[in-house]
Length: 379
Image 1 (cartoon, rainbow, N blue to C red):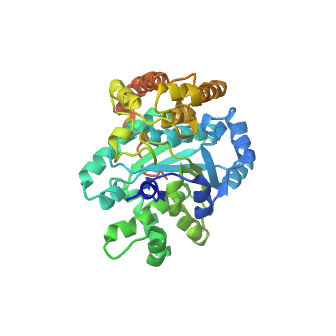
Image 2: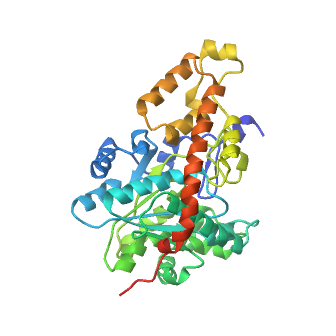
Image 3: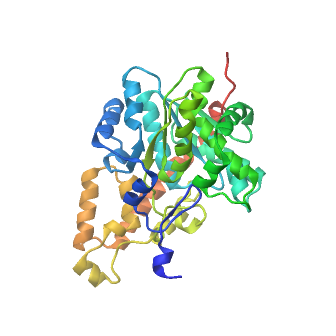
């Protein structure tokens, strides 16, 4: 296999690898580019512009402007996102969750958080259903540690909470043909029938708040762009079922510590998990891929390349809130003044501090887990 083939972009709901070309993805998925108007409108209601909005982490959308307009008319709006619990949570998972917290606060929105333990069991030969369910409740601690409002956050396991999901899932399944899911997801004759059924359960969450509250509520899905195929199908059937089409806002991928692709649980040495000890996480940072030169002399002469540096990406996405300080870091990197070892050490210290604080919140979440789990509708 050539180096070019190794770096070929692959983006599906189950696999993201290679060199990511976001312009190509926007064209391929047929989504709308993020606009400054949408950024400004979100920030106006929130009272400030989130780092991920300022830095262009959210690159595209479907009907986010409509969702905002509904809110500005005085209508209730909702949020939906999820997690496939096949292992521990890493920093890449946290990014859209932090943004969801920002949106929940800004728009006083209910958040439905789906844990697709059934999907992971059906897709992974190395994962038992019991393990997937165990990861569901372990991962829920990370969700809670992000600071969501327990009165407006509903975390649910597809398998454990199916009694709240199945009827709506059936209605969605009846509207969705096998030819459609085969074309969108590439299913073939060797795929198990559970994997073919599962999209209905992921699609129906777009309508779950509306169904539970008995009124049509606009739903916005903040997620990485690899999950877009589910919502394309959902939008085709929504109005036929009497619901609004779900809106979406798509995030870029946080890169792994190795070269190429997003941070992935399947490559544990390239990912920083919330369960890693701060010391272990720091060691991973010190081994990360950078845009540095081969020698100190070349670095001083030619400067670093922050545009391809995964260490710089972590400052950009998460670990430097001050925009001017980020600009300054980029400048001294390009000038050759900043060495990669120094930059890594500084990031390692920030990662250690973050994990120490986050893990304390994660432990406290054990005591309030039940407050966040989906409850029956009280009529």
